[in-house]
Image (cartoon, rainbow, N blue to C red; front, side, top):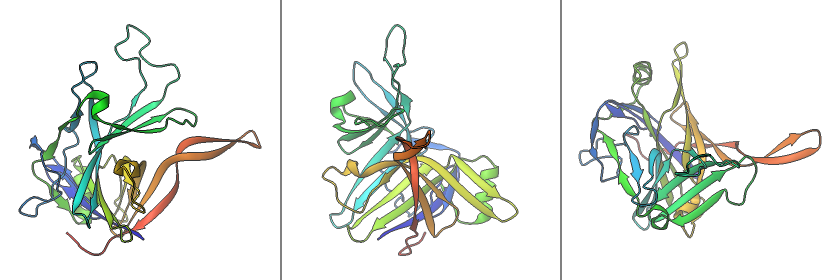
Length: 278
């Protein structure tokens, strides 16, 4: 059974969920560690306005903006791997003199992790090239992580803190932890909150954010990066999180004519992990 935990953070920089919330306002130097707590036990997270992946290729030293970070832990082996989901762009004729966008256009989204690169290419129709895993160094050279952490992070552990950080326009980051007891794998999904719903009448919040890199922890993959799919995460309480994954989805047009497209479909929910709290 897969379980989940979330936490929110706020402060001058970012936020987390354990199923919780937080905020941000100042910046630190490049981050070279990825734990979610420091030596004092304080919560840590990326500053998503200032975190990038750069590449050294002479042909195209491309830079990607990091949108989310997913860390997968193998507790039995005592190992962890971090995956950085980057912002989407469009298929292009790079550095051409004209016609910079390809006519048969598609969305392009990379995820870097370990020595690997997972690329999603999403055209209007289903395609055999939707997912592709490569050795990252063979594409644009060895990726260079340019990570920035929030200098000060405050956990948003009450409704009032979540409400006030939202109203103040402070950046909010969440961390959601999921775990599969059968495989012994767990993961922390960290992402900035792009959409926050607030009900002042009912003292409720609801986070709706994506895409994120959702890890399938129900089995072990030969290449760990293959466990990842694009998803959105939604939650409004500390005891569960809902997810919807991009996948081939059936649509009906013109009576009996049936087609499939890539779409976020078949939502599912995961319960909150109750084995620890922050």
